[in-house]
Length: 72
Image (cartoon, rainbow, N blue to C red; front, side):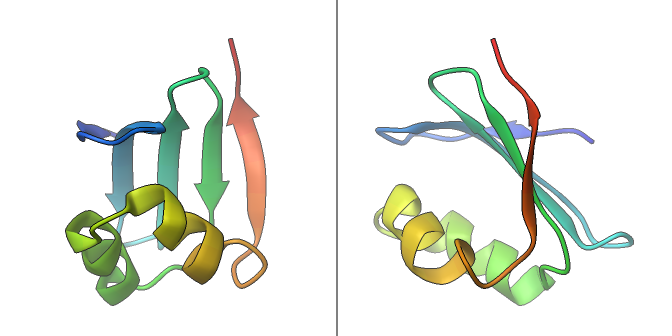
């Protein structure tokens, strides 16, 4: 999946696959988190969020299945 760079205090890049509904978030510490069952509406809201990391904590964590798929 291609991830696009973003300006964020904690997130390096974000990618989304609408077919599989998977969202990938690369953090500044090198970890890559994959969330599944995410709608494109949620992905778009994440990109537009004033604080992307707060959005992750408040809208994704605990609401969507997540696994760490990479780390440094």
